[in-house]
Length: 389
Ligand SMILES: *Cc1c(COP(=O)(O)O)cnc(C)c1O
Image (cartoon, rainbow, N blue to C red):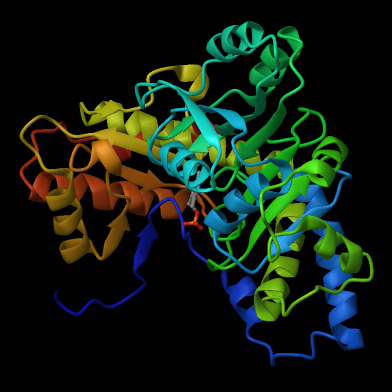
């Protein structure tokens, strides 16, 4: 690998670029997590983070990657042998399903083609059939990071309601929170799973469960073993700004700054910025003559775009060329998409010029690698950005 000067371009769909303001906030002497300064920080972030989830309910913050918060959502609400309905949207949905099975749950997978989101009609039909209410939870990945497809959460909520089914609704927003419109309370979600290293612009290491009253009530009778992940031991001390075990203190300084940044910009502006960058990216992809993996325009992800490469091209070799020549990391194809797609992350701390540079790196990489494409993708993106300020 040749030596590179200037900044590396980290354009994978998480971890994302950590802005300098957050790096400066994290760069702080570690403080006593039982002392008064910590209590003020804890109380502030535990309250502030609710605004990001758009909830008035408690949000539990774990020192863990997103996978930990997946596990927490299940072990707090369910009992051994419980049936859970999950939607096969892609690689991350498949991993959550595997985790559920390992915990002793009975996951039932609604099949998908990895180009569409969870199908509200299929969920409604399956729940309507389940007259005994054997299904205890419906689990959906909001933004499937392996495919760049965003499921329509309000429509899925409406489908559960039309079926008249009491199942809990669990949603993974690890790569959509702080990038794509999401409303825990208004959309009637029971557990929202989040992570720090994507739209929240933080390093990896924090994850979240936003918890509805219905989910907390279910936790009272849920019998899967839990200790570290137990919501109630967290919520009991969170009220005073503290945690039952050592929290990731310095990441919480960063979270405080991240919440401030998102709120100063305004969440709706943040979402509009992501929508605009995603549309510019899709225009570039089409101008190159390539195909976006997401098949339904209603489900385009605003945090990343997965791009199919032509037959005979290995997407990982292309990514290797781009890394070596232009010092830019792009997301790889996961699971059954290995070698078939590359993923452009355009979420988090990001702006027009960063997008143009990213797309320039992709266009130069495609040409350098000998992929048969048209030029002019960056031009198409610039025209869209200029015309849609
Ligand atoms: C990144 C991601 C995860 C996994 O999170 P980790 O922090 O790697 O454990 C789960 N679900 C989605 C949708 C993701 O994007």
